[in-house]
Structure formats: C-alpha cells, structure tokens
Amino acid sequence: MSERISDNVVEKLLEIVQQHDVLSAQLLEPDVLTNHKKVTALSIKKAAIAPLVEQFNAYQTALAQQRECEEVALGDDPELASMAKEELVELDSKLTARTISIQKQLVTAEEQSVGSVILEVRAGVGGDEATLWANDLEEMYRRFAHLRGWKIEELDTSKTIILSIAVEGVWTNLGFESGTHQVKRVPATETQGRIHTSTATVAVLPEPEEVEVELDPNDVKESITTSTGPGGQNVNKVATAVHLIHEPTGIEVRMQDTKSQAQNREKAWKLLRARLFDVQKAKIDAERAEARNSMIGSGNRAEKIRTYRYKDNLIVDHRISGNYNLVDVLSGNMQTMIDELIEAETARRLAEL
Image 1 (cartoon, helix red, strand yellow):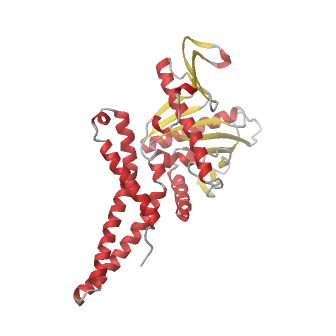
Image 2 (cartoon, one colour; image 1 turned 120 degrees about the horizontal axis):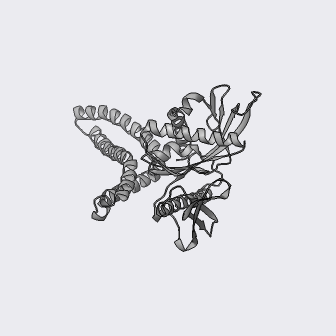
C-alpha cells in the first residue's frame, strides 16, 4: 500500500476541521453578522482552511471505501472479489494523490489564514539613491497588488513607506519579501556612469487581531503633537500627530499621515499592534526552532535576500538561486518568482513532517 497520512498529521487535521466548524458557527452569530470587520476576518480564516478540510473529508471517505473493498476482496464471491480488487487499485491512486495534496496544503495553512499584512519599506545604505530605490520597490509592490486586484491602504509615506493590505492569500505571497533588497545600477545623479550598490529593507508584518496580541494599553505612553515637516518646522497649528511608546519593549510609532487626530490614532495603534505581534512571534519562532532557517515568517531582515542588477536586466533571489527578468518583475509580474519560493519552502516543510 502507498504512503498514507501519519497519525500525528491526522490529529492536526482533525483540529483544523474543528476550527473550521467553530468559524462557521461564529459567522452565523448575530453580533458577528453586524460587524463588517469581524465578518471579513473570520471569512478569510475560514476560506484559508476550507480547501484543506474538503480534501481531508474526501480522504477519509476514500479510506472508508478502501476498507470496505478490502473486506469484499477477501469474501467468498469470486466476481465481487475481482471487482473489489480493481477498485482498490483506483482507490490507492486517489488516496496517494490526496495525501500529497493535503500535506502540501497543511504546511502552508498558517500563512493562508493571515489575511492582512503591514508592509514597510525603508531606505538602507546608499544615501539619496537608497531612498529612490525604496520608492521603486514600493511601486513594484503597488503594481503587483494592482495585478492581483488587491486594495492598498496607506498608513504612512512621509519617511518610511508603510502600507496595509487586507486580502486572502496576502501573507502567503508577500511573506517572502522581508529582508534586504540590494540594487546595482547607475544612479540618475552619477555623471561618469559608475555602478553603485544601494539597499532598502522590507518588512512584512502579519497584522493581528487585537485579541491575538499581548498589549496592555496601560503600557503605552501616548502623546499628541503638531505635525512636523522637513527640518522640524510645524506644519499644522492643530495638534493631530500621534506618538505612541510601548514602554516594556521600547517600540515607538509616530503617525501624522492625516489631519485627523482620530484617524492618526487609529493608524498608530494598528501599526503598534502589528510591530508588537512581530516581536512576539519572532520570540516564539526562536524558541520553537533556534536553528531553523525559514524563508516565510523568519523575521530575519538582516540577510540580503535578493539582488537587482540593472546592467544585466536580472534579478537573483539568493534563497533559491533563481534568476528573473528585472523589467518584468519591477512591472509587478512577481508571481512566478513567488510561486517558486513557496514551492521550495513547501518542500522543506514536507521533509520535516
């Protein structure tokens, strides 16, 4: 008989089935139905695991059919036994295919359930050219989101580019982007045609629900100030800028993107929760597997993950040694590269099951 799903994986799958049932029940509750944000969040989580639950249910049905056929194949009726043996061959093939499919979906289920992320792009080394490069990366992600039909919300674009994207599958696709992006090109300000190397860092933070973050409002110091522009001069006479400091960790958030104090406060707390969640998640990941070199959700942004070579019209992703057309990717056509990263990570995780 071909390989089947192991008992420990079956236990995990049964937990996911139960989770799916709980989410289905919650989506029918009156207080949830009147809360648009809650309905969206729960629907994304349910949709993420629904295909896995469907596959597992089909697997269990086929497994029951296999047991029935095995009994018939051992029976006294030669004709029925012969038919049962033929059906067993077909069922064995179906179960093998289901097993492979389920295992692949299982190892990416956690990423699929995250339906909202905050994407931060910061200029690295390279002065003004690094700032230009950060803007180019932002444009690449905007084009990719446009091609996917994703809606982007700007949280801040004054110094650090901070965007919020909420849609099913966003973490699976963008989780690989965290890291240092290096560019080799002739800057627009270079008069002698010399190639410079600059960097920008990208952070993709899974945006959690409030209940998932250990955040005591009493630990946060909040101050309201007037918005400031270049050079520190006051831009608005009315105090609308929000400054939050999470005192236990020292995490700071400043938000002055809008002229509304209430909107800035909402955005600031949203960003603080995401950054705090990222810190807490990184700590848990480190405790679970100190030596693990994960591509998705590792939080390790110090590594150079990708080099963009303008002279060769080439992008090299150092995690999978893949080469990609630079103009094509910067135009937003990132999906092929992302799919290969997902495939490599899925294979690595399957080897650990």
